[in-house]
Length: 147
Image (cartoon, rainbow, N blue to C red; front, side):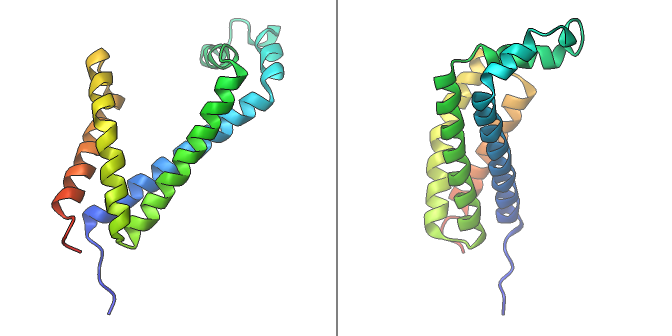
């Protein structure tokens, strides 16, 4: 007979899966920006964007002002974090103890920097991420020995 997974665990797996997909997309964008850095610089200087699409212009300005080495490092680091997050989600899905320990450790390590970021300036997004991570940490610690 197949055991039903707890709803809290399913929610954490879905959250971790979403984060892994988001990190993967971010990594791809960073590495593509690195590959096409010169093209982006030329495009940002073209007359096509003049006075139009402020969001695109702002984003391009941010990307072209990042050093290529920083883009490369950020892209690779984000890809590694995406893989670790996907491994966490898979391990939690199969209710592996090592996955719970990994998530507790990584989420626990992220809490102090998140608090620091909230002190520097609170936004809805920062607050939501902080609250979700606190909920994940609380749930996993509370249910660590149960399943």
